[in-house]
Structures are given as C-alpha cells and as structure tokens.
Length: 147
Figure 1 (tube, rainbow, N blue to C red):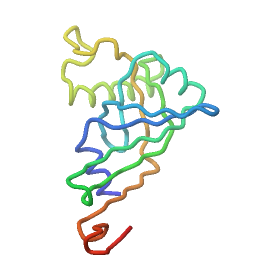
Figure 2: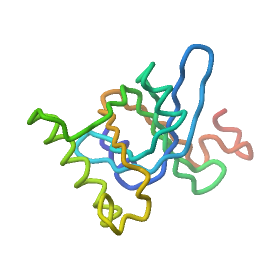
Figure 3: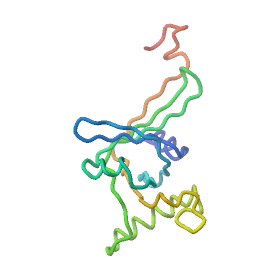
C-alpha cells in the first residue's frame, strides 16, 4: 500500500474508467493524491452525465522506465462530486480538495485559472488499491523469466 501511495502522490495525470449499462469509457484526467483521497477537476460533459448514473470508477496511473521495467496502480471506488454546500462536512471536504488542487495549479479557482471551465471537483477515496510491477529479469524474454 505504501509503495502504491508513493506512486499516486508522485504523478498528476491518470486515466479514469467509468461505465453505464453496456458502455465503458476511459479518459485521461489531472489529479492530486492527498491523505487517502484522489481529487480531480472536470467540467460538464459525457463523463459526468454517465457517472451520475453509476459513480463506481477505476482510476489508473503508470510509470514506465522500459518495456520490462514499469509500475502501475489501480484504485477502484466511488467518485463523489464535491460542492461547498450548506453542511460543514461538505464545505470542509470541498475546501480540502480546492487546497490540494491548488498545490499543483496555484491559480485554480481564481480569476487567473488556466482552466476556468473545470469547475467541478470529484473525490475518490482510495479504499481499494492494487499495484503491479515488472522488473528487469522477471518479465524479460531474453532471460526466460516471467510472462
């Protein structure tokens, strides 16, 4: 888990997979990982209209150094849409997300925001985390190791 969290914290772009009925999609998305939560920014569109019907998603990042030297983390969970609504808990979670997102884009949600249309914040609690890796020698066909 610790290695997976380190990998999650070290990246900013991932893929978000979501489905509804017989349709599955996957899209790249910017994110920040902080204290067990993945925070994303997005805008209205097909992704959100689909997620409203089925909030269960898969989230994946990869780090590749060579063909047989890579790591991958998959998080499965429910994507919650956050707002700064009337409840203290909702406001606190929203504020935490805005703070985390400003850690990678300090101008986020200000007049100088480089992506002002991305006004919707989502959060995925990293409850189910799965990591995989290939290392030289393990999956190297020249040595006969791995598959």
